[in-house]
Length: 178
Image 1 (cartoon, helix red, strand yellow):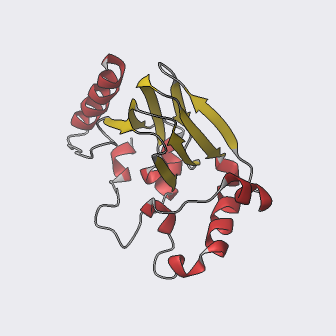
Image 2 (cartoon, helix red, strand yellow; image 1 turned 90 degrees about the vertical axis):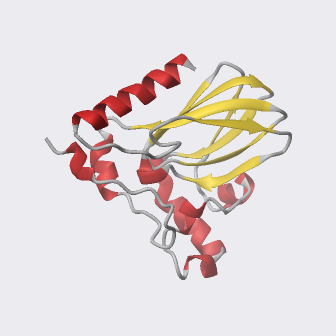
């Protein structure tokens, strides 16, 4: 879309100004997603705890569950206590995007959740460090990308990458030094 294309162009221009070229699909450039009935996405937070924006072009709704960033530690603790063996070799296992947990179970663990339904031509913005998961109510097409603001820079400096995956997104935060 034009608006997503503009975001990608601005990101590319900023990287060129810093004399570094970043090529990270889905982070620097948008991703296009096709959803089907009952297809889902597991709990995760964005790479380097970036913001994300998701636009639903057409089709059936997408249901999102989100843990506000100020409650991320409570969420991480609940997930780790439910399957501790998965975190033995990787303290960033949630970045693997492989865990599902029922919103009812998370509420029983006192993890605050926000539920939203995204329809055609609507945007969803996830804030840095906000874990989210969801599912599609039928065939749809959505597009997403990540973005940063000045406020994010300090969050990005503190974000951890998954140490066991060569695909884990990392970049030189020195790009943001003035």
